[in-house]
Length: 89
Image: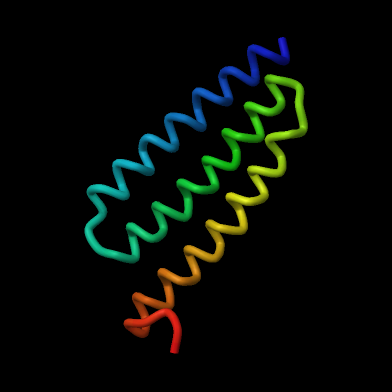
């Protein structure tokens, strides 16, 4: 029962990631694309954690944490670039 719920959840998060990629490509302007990229890395974190649950290992938790940190830094850098035109002053 638990494995079926995990597989259904993986399918739903994968669908959400595909829709995020569509918004990333089609987005009307740059802030929408940044938000789509931000949501895409959150979905990637969820997929990695779900994969770790299915495989029964804690190894994937570290990679999910690394993606979280890199995604946060990337989102902040993109927001600064869109607001000011440069990342580092």
